[in-house]
Image (cartoon, rainbow, N blue to C red; front, side, top):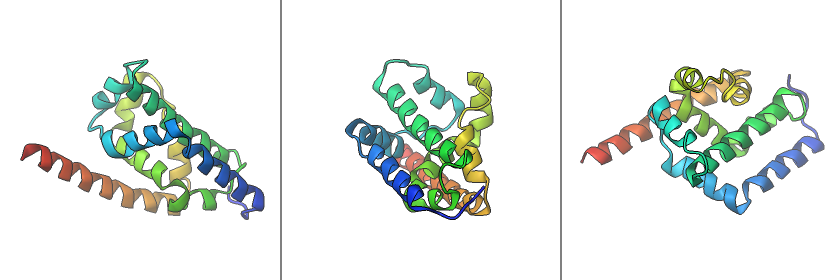
Amino acid sequence: MSKKATIADAQLILQLYDLRREAEMRKARSWWVGEFWPQSAEDFTKVSGTMGTQENNWLRQVAGYWSMAASFVLQGALNEDMFLQPAVSGEMYLIFAKVQPFLKDLREKLGDPHMFENIEKAITGSKFGRDRLKVTLKRVQMIREKRAAAKAS
Protein backbone atom coordinates (compact mmCIF):
# COMPACT_ATOMS: atom_id res chain seq x y z
CA MET A 1 0.00 0.00 0.00
CA SER A 2 2.84 2.44 0.77
CA LYS A 3 4.36 4.53 -1.93
CA LYS A 4 7.12 7.10 -1.75
CA ALA A 5 5.82 10.27 -0.11
CA THR A 6 5.24 13.14 -2.49
CA ILE A 7 4.75 16.87 -2.19
CA ALA A 8 1.04 16.20 -2.72
CA ASP A 9 1.08 13.92 0.35
CA ALA A 10 2.69 16.67 2.41
CA GLN A 11 0.14 19.18 1.16
CA LEU A 12 -2.74 16.88 2.10
CA ILE A 13 -1.23 16.34 5.56
CA LEU A 14 -1.08 20.13 6.00
CA GLN A 15 -4.70 20.47 4.87
CA LEU A 16 -5.75 17.83 7.38
CA TYR A 17 -3.83 19.74 10.03
CA ASP A 18 -5.65 22.95 9.12
CA LEU A 19 -8.99 21.17 9.52
CA ARG A 20 -7.97 20.10 13.03
CA ARG A 21 -7.36 23.74 13.94
CA GLU A 22 -10.95 24.85 13.24
CA ALA A 23 -12.49 26.23 16.47
CA GLU A 24 -15.25 23.66 16.99
CA MET A 25 -12.95 20.83 15.99
CA ARG A 26 -10.46 22.00 18.62
CA LYS A 27 -13.20 21.82 21.27
CA ALA A 28 -14.22 18.36 20.06
CA ARG A 29 -10.64 17.11 20.09
CA SER A 30 -10.04 18.58 23.54
CA TRP A 31 -13.13 16.78 24.85
CA TRP A 32 -12.05 13.45 23.32
CA VAL A 33 -8.51 13.74 24.64
CA GLY A 34 -9.15 15.20 28.07
CA GLU A 35 -12.67 14.35 29.17
CA PHE A 36 -14.01 11.34 27.26
CA TRP A 37 -12.61 8.17 28.80
CA PRO A 38 -15.15 5.41 28.10
CA GLN A 39 -14.62 2.26 30.12
CA SER A 40 -17.09 0.13 28.17
CA ALA A 41 -19.36 0.03 25.14
CA GLU A 42 -22.12 1.30 27.43
CA ASP A 43 -20.12 4.44 28.27
CA PHE A 44 -19.69 5.09 24.55
CA THR A 45 -23.34 4.44 23.70
CA LYS A 46 -24.50 6.82 26.43
CA VAL A 47 -22.91 9.61 24.41
CA SER A 48 -23.59 8.25 20.94
CA GLY A 49 -27.26 7.76 21.81
CA THR A 50 -27.90 11.33 22.91
CA MET A 51 -28.32 12.98 19.53
CA GLY A 52 -28.17 16.75 19.52
CA THR A 53 -25.96 17.09 22.57
CA GLN A 54 -22.61 18.82 22.32
CA GLU A 55 -20.78 15.65 23.39
CA ASN A 56 -22.57 13.59 20.74
CA ASN A 57 -21.60 16.13 18.10
CA TRP A 58 -18.00 16.08 19.27
CA LEU A 59 -17.93 12.29 19.39
CA ARG A 60 -19.07 12.04 15.78
CA GLN A 61 -16.94 14.96 14.55
CA VAL A 62 -13.63 13.57 15.77
CA ALA A 63 -14.37 9.92 14.98
CA GLY A 64 -15.57 10.96 11.52
CA TYR A 65 -12.53 13.13 10.91
CA TRP A 66 -10.05 10.35 11.70
CA SER A 67 -12.09 7.80 9.77
CA MET A 68 -12.05 10.10 6.74
CA ALA A 69 -8.31 10.74 7.06
CA ALA A 70 -7.61 7.01 7.41
CA SER A 71 -9.69 6.34 4.29
CA PHE A 72 -7.26 8.50 2.28
CA VAL A 73 -4.49 6.07 3.23
CA LEU A 74 -6.59 2.98 2.62
CA GLN A 75 -7.58 4.20 -0.84
CA GLY A 76 -4.01 5.12 -1.78
CA ALA A 77 -4.54 8.89 -1.85
CA LEU A 78 -2.09 9.53 1.01
CA ASN A 79 1.26 8.02 1.89
CA GLU A 80 0.77 5.52 4.72
CA ASP A 81 4.21 5.93 6.30
CA MET A 82 3.84 9.70 6.47
CA PHE A 83 0.30 9.57 7.81
CA LEU A 84 1.03 7.05 10.56
CA GLN A 85 3.76 9.14 12.14
CA PRO A 86 2.74 10.19 15.67
CA ALA A 87 3.29 13.87 14.83
CA VAL A 88 0.59 13.52 12.17
CA SER A 89 -1.87 11.01 13.59
CA GLY A 90 -0.93 10.41 17.22
CA GLU A 91 -4.37 11.59 18.24
CA MET A 92 -5.94 8.92 16.02
CA TYR A 93 -4.01 6.22 17.90
CA LEU A 94 -5.21 7.66 21.22
CA ILE A 95 -8.84 7.77 20.16
CA PHE A 96 -8.72 4.26 18.79
CA ALA A 97 -6.93 2.97 21.90
CA LYS A 98 -9.78 4.36 24.02
CA VAL A 99 -12.38 2.20 22.22
CA GLN A 100 -10.32 -0.77 21.01
CA PRO A 101 -10.71 -2.89 24.19
CA PHE A 102 -14.48 -3.01 23.73
CA LEU A 103 -14.78 -2.38 19.99
CA LYS A 104 -16.32 -5.77 19.20
CA ASP A 105 -19.02 -5.22 21.82
CA LEU A 106 -19.56 -1.67 20.62
CA ARG A 107 -20.03 -2.79 17.03
CA GLU A 108 -22.55 -5.41 18.12
CA LYS A 109 -24.51 -3.05 20.39
CA LEU A 110 -24.76 -0.37 17.72
CA GLY A 111 -25.32 -2.81 14.86
CA ASP A 112 -22.43 -1.33 12.89
CA PRO A 113 -19.74 -3.90 12.05
CA HIS A 114 -17.72 -1.18 10.30
CA MET A 115 -17.51 1.29 13.19
CA PHE A 116 -13.91 2.58 13.45
CA GLU A 117 -12.97 0.17 10.65
CA ASN A 118 -10.98 2.65 8.54
CA ILE A 119 -9.01 3.71 11.59
CA GLU A 120 -8.44 0.11 12.65
CA LYS A 121 -7.26 -0.93 9.18
CA ALA A 122 -4.95 2.07 8.81
CA ILE A 123 -3.35 1.43 12.19
CA THR A 124 -3.10 -2.35 12.04
CA GLY A 125 -2.10 -2.51 8.38
CA SER A 126 1.59 -2.06 9.13
CA LYS A 127 4.08 -3.26 11.72
CA PHE A 128 4.81 0.35 12.67
CA GLY A 129 1.12 1.04 13.25
CA ARG A 130 0.61 -2.12 15.30
CA ASP A 131 3.68 -1.37 17.41
CA ARG A 132 2.59 2.21 17.95
CA LEU A 133 -0.89 1.02 18.95
CA LYS A 134 0.62 -1.30 21.60
CA VAL A 135 2.47 1.65 23.14
CA THR A 136 -0.67 3.79 23.05
CA LEU A 137 -2.86 1.06 24.56
CA LYS A 138 -0.43 0.77 27.50
CA ARG A 139 -0.45 4.55 27.94
CA VAL A 140 -4.25 4.69 27.86
CA GLN A 141 -4.49 1.89 30.42
CA MET A 142 -2.10 3.74 32.76
CA ILE A 143 -4.16 6.92 32.44
CA ARG A 144 -7.38 5.00 33.10
CA GLU A 145 -5.87 3.49 36.24
CA LYS A 146 -4.69 6.90 37.48
CA ARG A 147 -8.12 8.42 36.80
CA ALA A 148 -9.82 5.56 38.68
CA ALA A 149 -7.45 5.93 41.63
CA ALA A 150 -8.07 9.68 41.73
CA LYS A 151 -11.84 9.13 41.75
CA ALA A 152 -11.55 6.54 44.52
CA SER A 153 -9.60 8.85 46.82
